[in-house]
Amino acid sequence: MNWLEKGCVRAAPAFKRRTPKHDMINGMLRHGHLSHRCASQATVTVTKVLYTTEEASTASLEAFSSQETHYRFRPSVLLPFAACASSSFGKVLQAVSPQVGQAYAAGIKLAISDYYNDQIREIYADMADDPEALPLKELFKSLRDAELDDVEQLFPSIEAAKENQVAQYAKTITQVLLQPGAHL
Image (cartoon, rainbow, N blue to C red):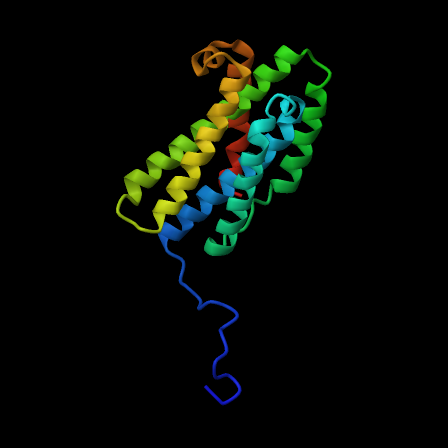
């Protein structure tokens, strides 16, 4: 270190080798970011009902952004396409009855909360004692709870939403459509 560099902070952190744990966290964050971003676009028709959780959704996207810089994960390649498609689909949902739109939004939110549950289980199984996993676990828990709170605002209970045929159809379709996002 020369006299000019004394007292300076390194701008870029040291290069870290990729590990299987890092790849797993990277995939979780990338897929979670994609699904959360797309759900917020597709459920634009029912956001009037869900004003209270709009702030939580904004905070969640900020949390994903902070995790993006911390873990250096790259957003999914499908993000621009999926955001455009889900926004277009959200506009189509405005043309149908409010009950169908709300049921479809609940199905999307159920699918995403199931995704978060799967990630939490995977963290408990693979990284139970890892201190790095704690913030990630808390992020996924808060996102899951926010999604389930939205469902409870749209339906009398989560069980009622799970029994609704439109919500189940939307949940199944969402899970199928978001599957490639985990790998790209």
